[in-house]
Amino acid sequence: MRQIWKSFRALYFASLMMLIGSGLLSTYLALRLAADHVDSLWVGALMAANYFGLVLGGKIGHRLIARVGHIRAYSACAGIVGAAVLGHGLVDWLPAWLFLRVIVGLGMMCQYMVIESWLNEQADANQRGMVFSGYMIASYLGLVLGQLILVMHPGLGLELLMLVALCFALCLVPVALTRRIHPAPLHPAPMEPRFFIKRVPQSLSTVLGAGLIVGSFYGLAPLYASQQGLSTEQVGLFMGSCIFAGLLVQWPLGWLSDRYDRAVLIRSFAFSLALAALPLAIMPQVPLEVLFIAGFICSLVQFCLYPLAVAFSNDHVEGDRRVSLTAMLLVTYGVGASIGPLVAGVLMKLFGSQMLYAFFSFFALVLVWRIRPKAVTNLHQVEDAPLHHVAMPDNMTSSPLVACLDPRVDEQVVQDQMQNPVSTGPELESEPETETVTEAETDQPPQDPDTGRDPNVSEVRP
Image 1 (cartoon, one colour):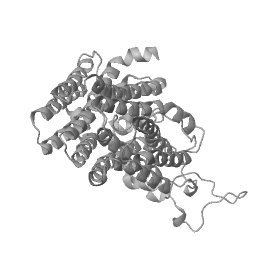
Image 2: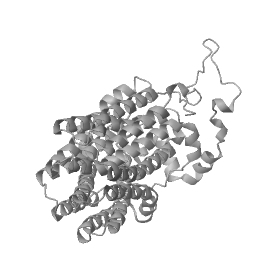
Image 3: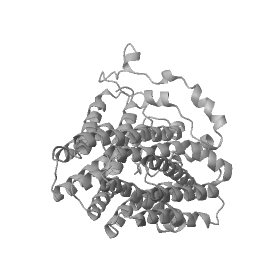
Image 4: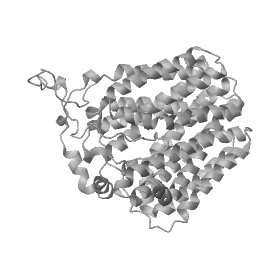
């Protein structure tokens, strides 16, 4: 691990600085609007705009990197993001802030792409898991430190925007000064939405639900805490402890995921989230101790849903489609994270701040209803399933190129599909959709002659 840290410390530092700035900016904007008594709808809209920019950057980033190269693309985007951050201090017109948030999200997605493809280029095949873990730790740690800045600097003046811009300036340094040759440009992974909707519908439902919940958390939890009477320092501590819970739970989650049925785990964690969020959902005013404890427990559970869904979907998709699967999961998560803050913001405006956690509880129950382990048949489970669980950052801190770092994805497949998409795309598109068979499409499902039960384990119907 020490050798890995020494080899990749520059890129880890760049990721750390980016996420410190991003985490601080999201919380600062929510608290700034709360101090100005702006409707929670606008707070949710700003976070939705950020996620829309992230999804949009997933397409634009590839073209930019292919056109000007990794270092120039990263430097240009870091400069644009820094300028957009300072733009929030130059204008108070909220529609302009929405546009600036889209620009920030788009630019950061391009930066993620550069760092992730660079990490993959430098990592040996037997190191990719450790390299990926270090990247995830740097990402979550950056988000936590961004919140703790509010504890040391509770004022909501323009100084915080300057600190965010400073972080994006500093993240330029290790990339701009590298002596390594930048990696070859990668093309967008082929998207096959109809195939994945048929093959892994329950996994996509979980990713969509995780986007709704986690996107709303990042955008509106600071506003919720502020409306509960917490000071700026306390809001920073609350957000920091909740995000730290997301990092803390990843390794115990991996142990559980490798030993128990993942569909059962998703349903169990969703039900646990519904219960954990209930006290905060029904109490208009929550004592400080209860708020921190319940918020920490909710975060422990809510940050489990996305990595479990990724692992579950990889169990039922062949290796040559996992690059496409990663892109599909990103788009699905981004759609949920764009819609969630808007809907939750409207509910908070109409019925009070506690509706944020009522929103969490409701959609957690939707997932309990939607995820049905007994409805899973056994058609498309890969031979080595369950695959080894990999701790995953949420898609606020990663791009479609995270597939390059995921040790579950064969490195040669990544190179074939993302460097020479023309040669592989038609093969993917030509595969018949009838490969996925549901019970409704057959007169009789396959049965084991000894037990009379379906021997397959593929996720094929809700």
